[in-house]
Image 1 (tube, rainbow, N blue to C red):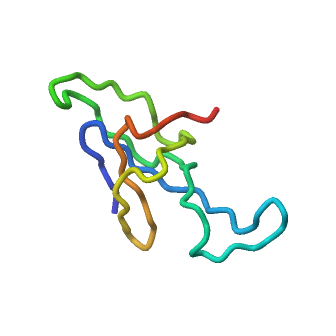
Image 2 (cartoon, one colour):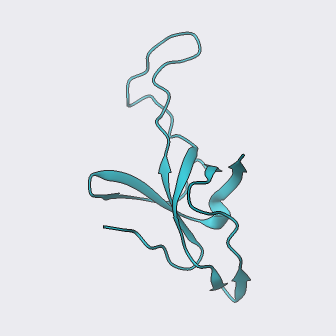
Length: 94
């Protein structure tokens, strides 16, 4: 099953959270921070959003940094994705 986002929405898949600190201490899943690094899975077409034209700057397979608590988490076919607005993406990692 595929996800096709609408308008300025972007579907991302978060990279795995760090399980070990820089000092070598292993973290339980409850104490791990929500990852801010993700890979773009699908991109909406852009268009008119709130009366303004939105051009999409991200594309599939881009590595991005997102706002910490942005988006809507969904589970599809056993995989977890987050749907965010393009404006919630802070940077593209090159």
